[in-house]
Length: 309
Image (cartoon, rainbow, N blue to C red; front, top):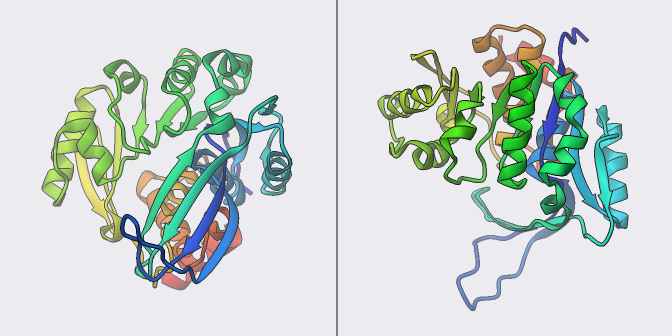
């Protein structure tokens, strides 16, 4: 492994209850499922696992409940090459839960109970100041309390740790937080909420990126689903297409992309090559069911890229 930089991920941990159905139920309707599984998820944990499996030197700052599933998740994260010392079991809280329906087209609808994720307070973030200060990059999402995300971004900024924000799930963010972000990775919906620009075409993506650059963000990557990613660095934009594969479910595709992207960047790969590496990881993930079970290992990503020529 050519690890050159340390990564800190701050974020959520959930137990995902996934039910596959032919179509989503309408209000008042009961639909019989085809397949059910409990898988470990949460955007933070998914991105941490994607980074760990793809070869990053990673520590994960998060909270689980003081329960059996929380302990099982901590053990699994450790198996995925993640330093789990900063994963705290919180007394009196249950581990976060996501209830996920997946339809026949591989689309999903999700309901979340935050549980212990809500206990990742700014005070708890401050306890892990050294983990953030000692990292080369800090990757975060928005399933943790917003004031904690801001607190972590401030610590990172003060210590020259690069701040990468995946602004999901979609929500409005303060200019103060955005000004502390070095790289942002929204999808079309999230980009629209942050910029007011409806992202349908490459031109729209370029416009949305300009708004985000004006807020102080150097690198903007807008994920465009099957069309790939709009990459804009200091105003210079290009679309980098993804790989075409047969998707079975898209749970954690974005998370896999983010974790693999940062891994490649910390290995000092050029940005366009890092995006291609991340596309490959996400392409493998969508051909498999579930969140973390679908995340590929480094060897799989490398061989996928070799097969693409």
